Every structure is written in structure tokens, then in C-alpha cells.
Length: 68
Image 1 (cartoon, rainbow, N blue to C red):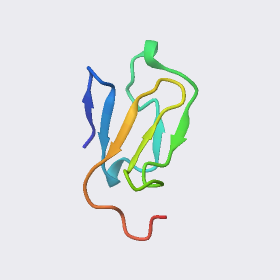
Image 2 (tube, rainbow, N blue to C red; image 1 turned 135 degrees about the horizontal axis):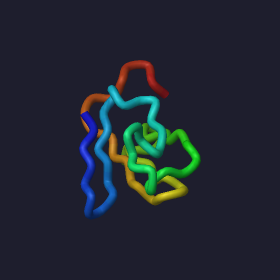
Image 3 (cartoon, rainbow, N blue to C red; image 1 turned 30 degrees about the vertical axis):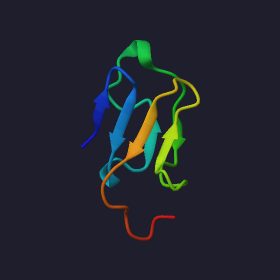
Image 4 (tube, rainbow, N blue to C red; image 1 turned 90 degrees about the vertical axis):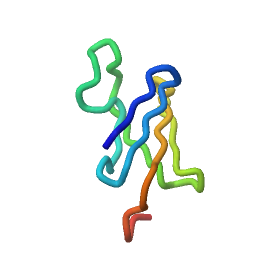
């Protein structure tokens, strides 16, 4: 399940949300920008920031098996 904190533009994502792209489905029209895929599992902190809007995606939960 995806949780959005409207104040800090931080989105918590799980393995169910992978592959992760920003903007997320259902985003309002004013929040749209070119779609970009983000690798939240690339770094040790398990997060990634969108280069367009600055939204920070934080991975929570168990990492998928075999995902590099």
C-alpha cells in the first residue's frame, strides 16, 4: 500500500509498487510531469527522489527476493 505525506511530499512504497514510476497513477493533472522510473532499492537507504518534482519515495517492508 502506498502512503503519501502531503506536507513533505514523501511517499512510502512497498514491493507491490515496483517497478516504481513518478508521477504515480491517479496523480492530479497539476502534478503531472514526464514519467520517470526510480530505483528505490539502489542505495542502502532504500529511497529515491524524483528529479522533476522532488517527491521522495521511501521503500518500506521486506525487499523482494532476487531484485538487484
